[in-house]
Every structure is written in C-alpha cells, then in structure tokens.
Length: 280
Length: 233
Image 1 (cartoon, one colour):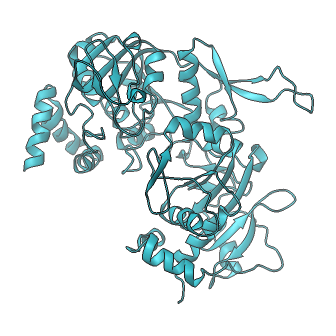
Image 2 (cartoon, each protein chain N blue to C red):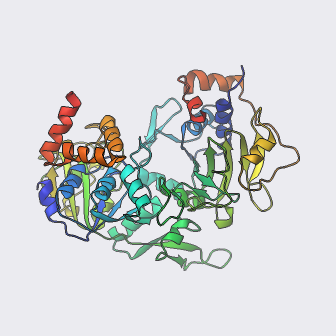
Image 3 (tube, rainbow over the protein chains, first blue to last red):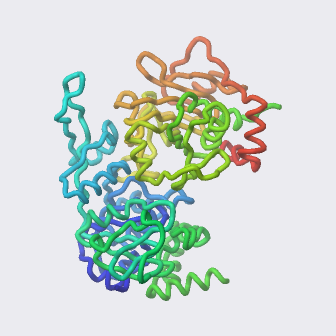
C-alpha cells in the first residue's frame, strides 16, 4: 500500500494508536499522509512526540491519550504545549505504565487490567471515569488491596514504523527497543506498518521479528519514513531538522513557511526537500 | 582540592542510592546521572544503569545488558528501581508536579506530563533533584499531583537534593525536613527559599564534602567537560 492508501482506510472520529516513543521510530510518513487527508476528530493514543504535535497543529487530533509529549532532545513538544495552553486539544492524561496496561488489556480482549500506578495521583482527579477495584484475594490483614482498573484502550487503527517488513506484514525492528508497537497492533481493529525496506524474507535474530502477518492489515514501503525521528540503525534522529521544526512551531508565520516548504506536497516532495536542506 | 557546589551535589545525589544493591538506578538530569555513576564506581557497585535508551551499561558506558521500556515497567512494578526525578513543584508531603502549571484543564504552562511519576512513587523508592531551590518549586500545594507524596500513599521518598541542601521526610508526620545544608549555605537561606514551613532540627549538619578520590573520578573520568557546572548556572 502507499501511505495515502493507508490514510484512505481511516475514518473521521477514529481512535488511532501510534507506535514508537517520543521522537523515536515514529511512523512519520503515515502521519504526513494523514496531514494531506481530510480526516478529522481523531483520538490519538501515543507515547507522544512530533506525531502528536503535527496532528494537534493540523487540528485533526481532537483528543490525545498519553503520559507525556516530548521530542527527547528537546524536552517539550511545542505544538502540544501551545494547544494545551490555548485549550484547543482535549487530553486524557495517564501514567505511562497505565497506557501500557490499557493496550495490553485491549490486546487480550480484557475489559481492564489492575495496576498500582495512578493511586493517589492527579490522574484519577482529571479522569473521573477511572475506577478502582479491590483484589478478591485477601492479604494478611484481611482486606484485598485497592488497585486502579485501567480500561482497555481499544483502537480502531494502529500505525507503526519498523526497520524491515515483508509484503505479508511480518516485520522486524533492528534498534534497541521494540517500544510497544506489537501491543498497539494487537489492540487495534486494523494495524498498518510502514517500513524502511520491504524484503522477500526477514533475516537476523528471531527476537527482532516483532510483528507477524496476523497482526497486520497493510504494509507500506517508506524509506526514511520515520524522519525526523530516529530509526536506528538505519539512521539517527535528524537533530538539526527537529530543531528547525521546534523553532518554526513557536511562531505562526514561521510555521506557515515550514508547512509550505516541507508539507505542501506528497511524501516524495517532503523527502526531496529534506535532502536539499541536508546538502545545502 | 576544594569541591564546587555542583560537585557537592553530585556526591549528595550519589548518596541517595547508598545501600540499594542490584536495583535499576534511573537518574534524570546531569548531576543525578553523574551521582548514580559515581555511586556505581565506588560504594554501590551493584547498581544497574542505563544509557538513556534500552541498554544497561557500566559506569564507563560499556553495554552489559538490555532494558527496553517494557522491562523498565516490570522492574518498576516489582519495586526493583530507585529513580531521581525533577520537580517543577513539590510540597511538604512530597507531592510532585511535572505535568502542568495552573488549571489542568487549560494550563498556564503545559510541562512534560505525569510520565511514570504516579507509578514510580507508589511502587519503589523515589528521590528528587531540584537545581534551583526556590519558593516557586517548594510550594504549599502542587497544581497537578504527578508523583504522590506521603499523604497520598508514596512508598518511599528517600531524599530531595537541591543546589542548597539535602532534605528528607524523617519526621513523625513524614513531612519535609532539612537534613543538611551544603558547605557555605546558611539554614535561613534554605528556609527562605522554601514556600512552606520546613522542619528544621536543632542541629543541622553540613552535607559531606566529596573525598579526593571522588573528586578525581568526577573531574577526570565521569565529567571532564564540566557539564555539571552548567546545570547549576
């Protein structure tokens, strides 16, 4: 599939999970395809980085479900920060372990999973729909322990970016961390993978083969498709470009210029503009 | 050799992990990171350190194992971790805020988000590092409870290390107490920089100075570029 075909399978109002972490191995080519589409009113579940920033800036993300929004080497995601302060995006703020547990519950078709994270914290204050449960098993003092019941984070679609995939959807990460890409796929009705390279057959350590084709509904070949986030060992984060993104995000006129320069055309136009910038 | 304030802080941070053994040490910030590595190199050789991504590394940065985020969450839930986090706000019970300043619904300043602070504080030991001790940080109440304090069920809040002092919660009500002042700092200075009543014992000791061996390790091995000084600037 092409990134635009994948975006074409999504619908207004969907809950979409995005893999990676912060500014690491994000399916940015698929995000750019959403930016080119008329999709709106999305709920985005993510360990948030510029994926969330771009969808908030475009006004397509109505709600964000996350524990943080960061560019890693730049601590705060500028678009997310601005939108929160302007009151233009809704937030479901969860502890990052709760987010993990919500995906795991959805992946296992469970209504919820219990966790200690969140007890006593503001997360329960700002999410009044969250409930606690008491363990049915007694402890030495008689009463069962009270735990947060993290509801399943069921996704309509998941978007993830891996280093290698085959045409059927088996896919492999070659960097140090799988993040939660497998859980995002398993928690979703439909999961879409973009990959640096499509290969006839995966090779290398079996532990790196994170996704199998039963978890995946569509594959796109997107070289440099995580840019400007990191996709090691294929490439590191493009720190210079990320800094340019963050500077542009701080100013409305600069952001218009950024959009015109990089995001007005298709993925090939974006990659060409990035290449021209790099050799300048 | 006379230690700089930053070097005193590195050693005070290292002391937070004393006695922890083979647990995951997760420092956030330059000085806490130097502290964790110093502890590992000297009195706490069992500590597990990460490279900030998914590898476990020794104090020299050589890979010794694997710790992706999902395993960090498991270590965290099992209680086998001691993190030193930052704090935009912290109150006398140890409630910490790294999420947002002002009304959460539409904050004056959106910060990082709660991250793993709620889970950290109910599962395993937590310490804090505040490079600029001021009433803006040490507030009567925090705007969004990220890490929970002792009044909300914290498991163990070990120490709060700042540019001025070391604080802990060793009072009968488990509220914040001045444990030691750094060399050259007056008790009144710390009290004035704290926006809530601080428990102050009759005798306040001075934070221990780095040993010559520790200073040598900090200056020539762990941080020859002197990045520690910039965190206090």
